[in-house]
Amino acid sequence: MSTLEQLYAQAEKRRAENQLPYAGAVSPAEAFELLQLDTRAKLVDVRTRAELDWVGRPVVGDGQYAHVEWTRYPGGVPNAEFIAQLKSVADPDTPVLFLCRSAARSKLAAIEAAKAGFTHAYDLLEGFEGDKNSEGHRKTITGWCFRGLPWLGA
Image (cartoon, rainbow, N blue to C red; front, side, top):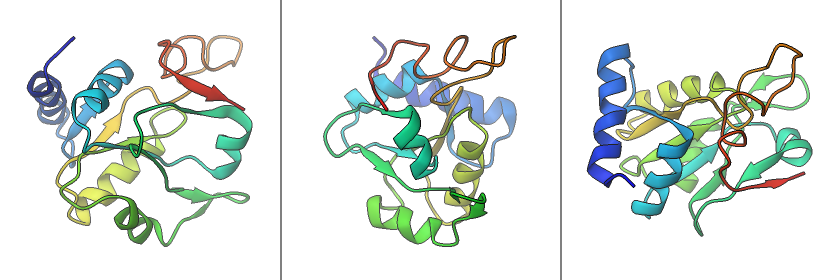
């Protein structure tokens, strides 16, 4: 198990190496450890409500999970209230780890959160379901689920 300082240092290292416009990026395992070590941290799931209902969601500590859609379902319309809703679940100085299906929307959410003054906005690499395998299936090569981290199925 890593220390909290090591986890944040690794995230910062990724920020610097990849010139990220937010605080950094963490792997699924690092995110799970970080949430256990820093009870202030929040995992903000930016997937649609339909994804939660049909696929499932991560299991983390009490009060550490929040759902704020990046886009609306159906239609994929951007959530114009994203920042306001984010501010209702976390303060700008709260460490916030953004999660989506495969780490595309979570990057966008981290960028917007950082622009809005969230100084500890992190992207959760690989996402919840991860990349598709050669047959087009997820949860088989990367992601929160593949890594064996706790989650509730749909």
